[in-house]
Image (cartoon, rainbow, N blue to C red; front, side, top):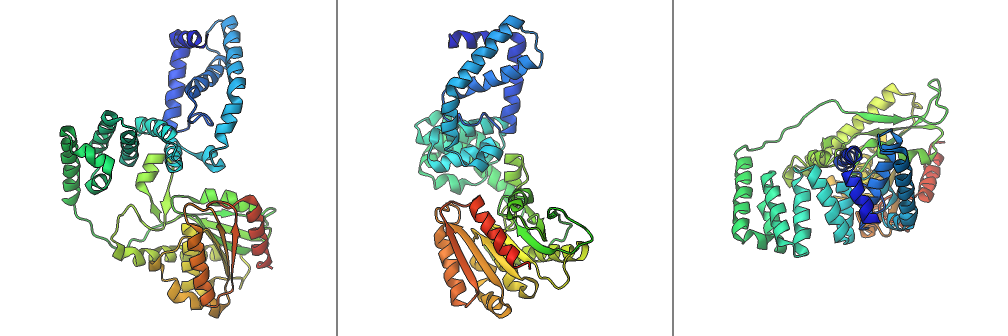
Length: 434
């Protein structure tokens, strides 16, 4: 019955065309049906849902046929809803609610779910054939499953799309074996030509000044005639301000204005690949040599300091009240950079699963935190796969040795901050805004 019904759908001209447009739009946006990542009937259920929309919008299928099809669709959805819910529980909620096919593919790759990763990489690369990183990941997965012909074709597509890093392919055992085949040697030549072309246009680096943006979150019942404390909120690598500001609402800060600047560098490759703005304060896409890292840190810190100056000048901030800086992940690294470099401008710092890099010059300046009495709250998940808890322990040891007023709060969770911990952070900030 199911097979016969699917044949009917494919032969119903207007419905079929509508479905094709709807599914094509879904693929381009990167948002496939949620919760059926590895279920074999995922696309069938998705098309049934789209069909319901088509019929409701007035397509010219006969009324009695519409009724039968809709009831069949509802029946199938009821049958597979428990399976969908079970699958959806396997995906972190932020990924379910906001992710693209590329992000889901990357997630399943990390989880070791090759079937789902391949499915989503195929969706993504079909809609975004210039994403060489995704193509290489897909080729590696296909090779690991023994699909050598598909892997070779995918790697060839990556080379045609502009892949120029041969070293990354040669260091991978599976992909390197493809390069040793006759077709693989042609792929190697294409990658080498891409690299040669890039090398013919050498890059130099110089300081750049431009206009940047930051977003503002006003407290509930905001009155421009009143004065408020200031909180500087720094997002993580590959994020943007809205993600953090939505989280910051749960802090419930009644007497503080929160400002969240965009990190100064656009991650061009990720922004194009994912179709959404991706930002960083590290300038990965430049790509600058490691010797430039201290300069990049300094310039990014200056930008965040500029945002503080502008906010204090243009917003109704309590005179003489120093701001509190809150940073997540890479933002946590820069919260430390700001507090140690400009201790006279910061009251306290909240580090949310912070990363740590030696070239930030933090260790050499920790004495400034003790001298100026800056309090530090460090919140870190014990199962954090992005910035491991061991990094948190390293930071804790450095701060304690320096005699800083420092607190490490560990919670059972991963990289993101759960609601129960968020409320505690809000209370901690509120106490220091008195």
